Length: 225
Ligand SMILES: *Cc1c(COP(=O)(O)O)cnc(C)c1O
Image (tube, rainbow, N blue to C red):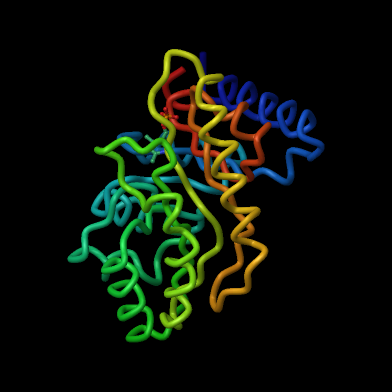
């Protein structure tokens, strides 16, 4: 299958899942996860209409931003504090804000560079020990404290489901993140506007959309079907 075909299939499935949840394809942002994918292929995807790409390693991300600066670039993987300077001011959205000292570092750098740093809060809904993210019952107090960090802009929540044999099994995880967002949205926090839910990967993006995702991070179903 070539890139155009796999992309067409993914887009159709996104549209169908969006329709099942009372929305349209234009309500869903597809982030094509291009980690390990070469520049030529990414450029081809861009020409086919993909505007948003996701990377999980900062060095690779930076290289690709230089090559294709006209695209929108998302950091989806765990960030180390010594790499903060390489992402602030360059990325469209950081999906992986997962701890307080990272929030402080991002804020410090944002203030220095006089830029806003758009982030999603990564939540460890599945409770897997090896997974990054803050605990569901800490989300609200975390959002409250983030109000002090003026350069940060928290635009929503992100989670990673465990790898299941069927995407359907991830449904309760996505439902829970949606509920966490709904509940937290009743409060008012400074610098917080929970408009995005980033959840769903190749194996489960349709289920995630049915449960309210408006950003899906799809890699292998596009680049390696
Ligand atoms: C790799 C990755 C994805 C995409 O995974 P696929 O199964 O290839 O779609 C999504 N989110 C994160 C955080 C990833 O690291």
